[in-house]
Length: 391
Image 1: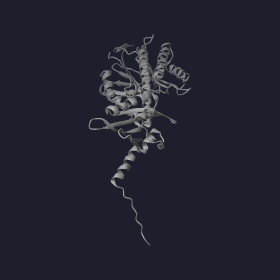
Image 2: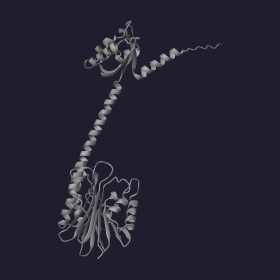
Image 3: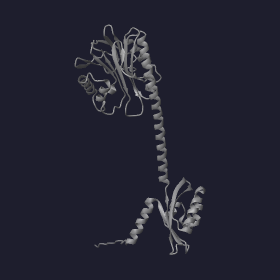
Image 4: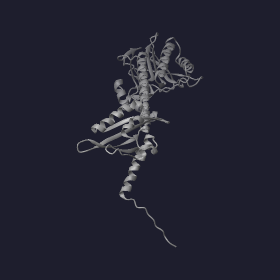
């Protein structure tokens, strides 16, 4: 039927000692004191733990510390101790110690308390285990080195692919005349990322005075995409130039992709052949955005004939369509980078292109691109601008 109440009172000195112990534990360090006059040495318990020594053997004299460290670090530590004892120069010296778990990285920081005449009388300082910190620093350095190496590899690949692309896809200095048409082309690489894409174009005059126009887009980026682009570009020109139909060329190009090295490449394409005698544009497509026709203040996309992207099926079906051009017409063949924006439906991009061209139908291709690409474009952009002059 009684109540027993007990308490333990901690005076400020006890609390201060507890906090000092907590600091040593959290910082993985221990304090040490050497009296140079009396020879007394006192270490905290944490100092023995940091140095990996048995507390039963007692503290080590200041002059004996270099014998505990790795041989390659004993000389700098011995010189620092000499400078402290004789000239009261404080020091902060890193050193290494061998242990069963491997090499440990430590540091010792010390300063002297001097007599009135400047003679060192006492040394106090601390030792700290930096192994975990050093390991983290080394891991960070290795990670940064790997990142820089990877970035260098990617930049080298980008430079190589860029040179290869310019060699395979030279841009004319200005508008050219083909089969009575005024033709202007533009190619803009993506502004984000460091790898080039596989967009390409062809605009050539055939042996029968007709003109061939091609715009294509290989999936992916880098050397592989540029190589596939070159393969498709030159093969398409060769096939149509030697008499193959547009749909027949697409069928053979599809087979070519299916039997490529990896067998996983895909591409979209528009093939168009213009006959200047009839002013008829015959065209076929493989999963590509349709051309945009501007006529008399109106802009409309041509109805796409059947055709799926290249490399997606072993039995694709391709149809062709025709459109008769009239004097003053403007026809745009383009890749999807011109109309696509992140987070936006592609149909909104098509509508924006139609509105822009309808409003500024007489402006140059550079002006049109400036209006369409007001923000950073994340994909390559390729455009072939075809105009039939007014007779």
